Image (tube, rainbow, N blue to C red; front, side):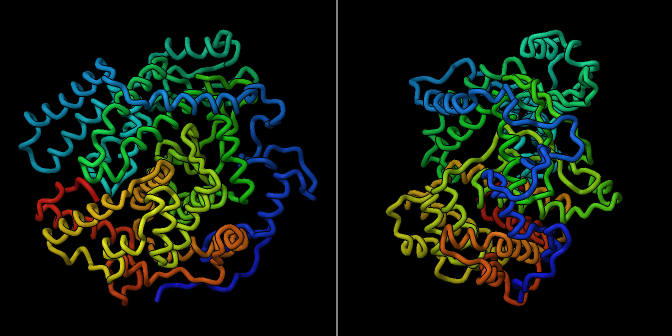
Length: 576
């Protein structure tokens, strides 16, 4: 039997305690924070912005929310950004031909180059050659395609290793804009010469990604900062790409089963909603404040949000405090510094899930280029342009999906999927359970032949499509985040017991949010144990399996890929 919820352990000083190694906040502390957010705190205010948000100690400035001029009119600005989306994604008679041809030329050229030069090489070298050509094509095509590359780079174990490694360069190693272009954008937006604001401004960028690049600088007032500068042609390029994607997306529905399930038009709409907000750094700075407040309200201490500057925030320039730490992949350096990388990841996942389940707000663009691990084990998290936001009905459905999944309530989970918009409202859930064979034991996929696996996958996809299944926009953003965590576990904690991790995370929510969860959806996690036996059964594992590591999960995926290749279903290392 797997681990079960234990009685609450003794409290630690400062209103915090540990649950199976997880540092958590007591319910009383979280409620105090919530009362403080509502203006009813009984605690004496220190006047620090850390009373409001999850910022670091000894910041270069103290944020007074009422004195931030760049926040004026942001609600109307966000609404205008959202109102633009229907126009961008509306169906046109013809796509933007010039951009359409350019994309076909770049991607097609990459495929042709691979066909002539790399196709006949050894399998791994062939995949590496194709990956490099595709990455270069995506970089030439700009922000929309680079963003796709960043998603791929977080999918270790789900995408080919060669593709993941190559597309890591899309996180922060894209070709930067020349310094004279950077200077022009900064001076136009700040309305004064660069030297009047900064005593020093590094000509070489620290990192360059899809829509912007960042430079280290020092303000005239002496504070070290990071300056995020938008690429000058991003606005027009992104809009053309969205129009092209919106034109082709409806043709994919029902034609490619997996693409149909992923709901291509909704995926384009999600991209349009997020990327249009990313194009205005004032909205990103506001997202930073929102996420910082959610983290502070929840009592989370694992994530540190950099402070945006009180004055120097514009549409295309964002000045923020500079935080330092270990790069995401410097696992050896972290461990040498005494950092428990497993606990870092566990705490990050709790914060991510807490934002989605309890608050309906979460960071929507997690990848290795967007974070540092600070020397004390906290995570400095950047790039808040893409932020997941669910309205209350969606949040409650998502909460039900997570809780019913934890206790293996399959029908309840399908009902939650339906309420999230993944299934039509009139879906016959009992019929769907039979079609998907959820009313019978699951076979171990590693013990099935290739033909059996292909047949099972085809039947599942056919059944889902017949019932009108699709992946709604907010769920896609959540899945994108989980792709990051899957790759991060493979990188930073491949030998953790996945069953134990699930139990620990469930314990956190049972001991910190049971009252709210019961009030919201009528489910009391403090009285119900996570069903690890059901989790094993859903994976086709035997009852006597006590643990499974992420490394072992990867090995199982490899076996399944091999079998699928044998069965003629999917190419080697092309899918999970």
